[in-house]
Length: 251
Image (cartoon, rainbow, N blue to C red):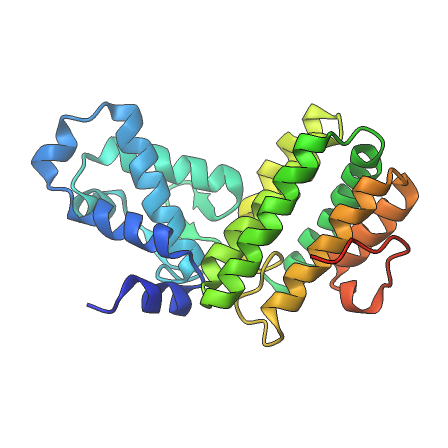
């Protein structure tokens, strides 16, 4: 079996995620049956989501409850519930009397998700800049450090985890609780469409992490328009061409 690091690099997932998925698959059916149904559903959901995001389950592939249940060692009920959750997230499409399939995402849908991300991040940054707390700034800086470490280690999955955590934290800091709910609704699409931390990116991942330092500095400046401008440019993929007015202190 390849190492978890090799598999993580190939799949664009963090090593911890690959290790968790592998461990989950080793749980014997007898052990699985003693778990509460809710925990079983969560376990199957995490496994299916990981397989879809990694590409192990490809777009258009049918999801058969009986096959999933047999593969992970559960009854069909947890598999059915997990598929419903994935359908709610948009990763799966279910057709009456035809079954459920891994969603096929077009270039147009990817563009639409990116456009929505720009709107959400611009709004979140504008709100967060006027109410950001020192603890939140420290947490955001820790997320950036995690990105830098992942870049040094070549662990792109861990980079994407830290990247999503960073932007989720900004949404939580903006003062609008409904925005965070909206972000969580599209987060799986941002991941699966590579709108956040694209594993196919061929540039310098350390430089990409550095762009997030500029975002932290913009929030710390308390200037809502500057923060909104930089976050919108970042979400559009224009960070390298957008100069911040507030430079972060040298590390």
